[in-house]
Image 1 (cartoon, rainbow, N blue to C red):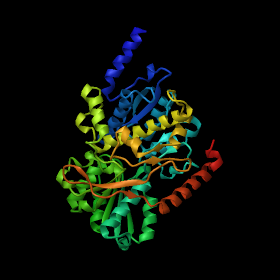
Image 2: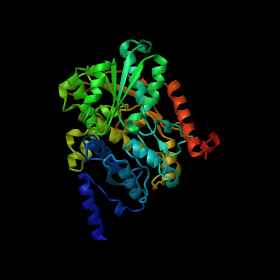
Image 3: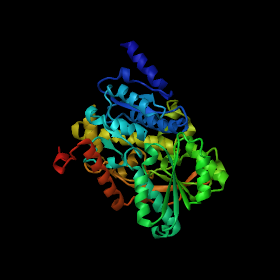
Image 4: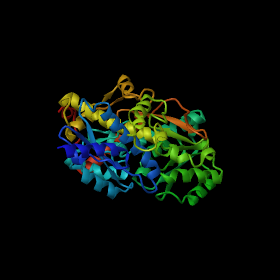
Length: 441
């Protein structure tokens, strides 16, 4: 027994390593959370800070006493941003009593979505995944909480419209979408096509082969077509490459708008002043170095040698997104405990109910350390997203600065698109959407 306790202590001390695992020693009182991440390959520089923020938040929850006394255990599995490897990680870790899974990849989300109803494990996708999964009547197990790619695309078009003096001024304009040629990169296309029809702008679609290190032909097309704006839907090395090519071809960075996975420190730091003026939509948060959450993480983890990753990364954009992603999953567990019993380990089914009944008011968010970082989120049986707010931040050569007010995605455009696409999925899979009566159970 003493030896077992010693092994547990050693595992805890080693928590700062890139792979942390205590699942082998988990007691029934522990809540297990798999961590699918990628710290290697062309997407590693972006994936690592997200994972560091995610893991640090789980550690912070334990440092705060757990969820009503229930401690978290977790195991990290390297996916390399590869769908097959992501599914392998999921299959290996799900048997350990997974509370939920966050695939951190749209391709992996598509694959795991098909498994979730049988496995009864919620699929949480914070700012990525299937946009139509916001419809909880069809996608019972999917939770794209806080925003989808249709929200991001809508916010970008609104921001461009604001710059032009109104959405009506977009008529006759050209907007090029430079996108990662994958399920992730193709997600915004339906929304942008809808907006194009509404406002009369010409949408040019320019796919980039992954990982995106070769874009000269793409930017030659941009130089020839001379679009008024470029929307960048990249990830990893594709983002900095696009900004460098824009600089080389003389395309104004202030006319570029990236998705929130193309608007973090790794995307611009190597370009520095060359990226000045580049814009990106943010999923509510941005870089938040002065937030209470950051101060708590530094004091309770990093100052004690228990943090994950570089200390100076804490509070940066992707770190904060990882922490926010972990928080939303944890609050799903807490919500489940409110119904099924505080101080108890929740099953995947119970956590699914909790995620479907989130009510994160501003006072709750403030108490968790997210004051000034996020707006309230409230999910339901029909709405698995819970919020559709975003902002624009702009790189000033040294740091990201917010340059817009809050933007809310237009539900009159998004809701019909979600309903139609979800209904098509239900028909293809022969699924019967839930009714209001079903939601009460």
